[in-house]
Image 1 (tube, one colour):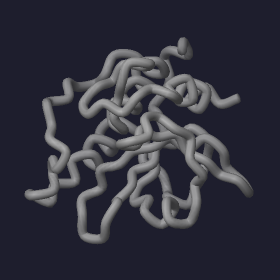
Image 2 (spheres, rainbow, N blue to C red):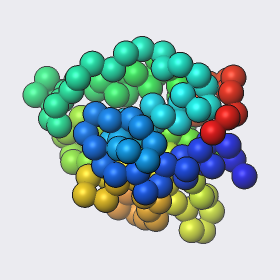
Image 3 (cartoon, rainbow, N blue to C red):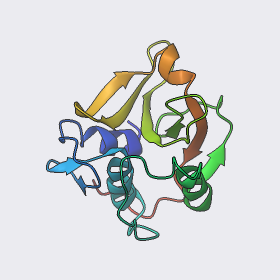
Image 4 (cartoon, one colour):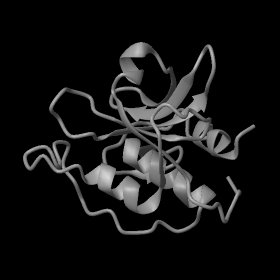
Length: 147
């Protein structure tokens, strides 16, 4: 089993709470990634400032994409591996601001994400989700595998 996937799945059932990042208590999609990072890599590489639900949209700022490029390993979108970090653009012309982690690959792919109204769930990586992926990353060298 992939350690990133195992760690992400340990968050399933965590309620959706905007700006939170505490397994079992609450998180949003960024909070899920932050929590998996802490388990897999160590301390978070930078403080996350408070943000609104529409953050980065008025300015058209690809803030999550830049953070991914700064702290994760960028990879081709079509190079699919379990444990990848997925960045989604939810609407054409909008900034990319939803994050998930690839869980299963192959004929029945899935991903783990925190979704408003659902909490942390594992969803089918269906065509509607796949076409929204704008970037794919992998974690940097792992320094911890505790989870």
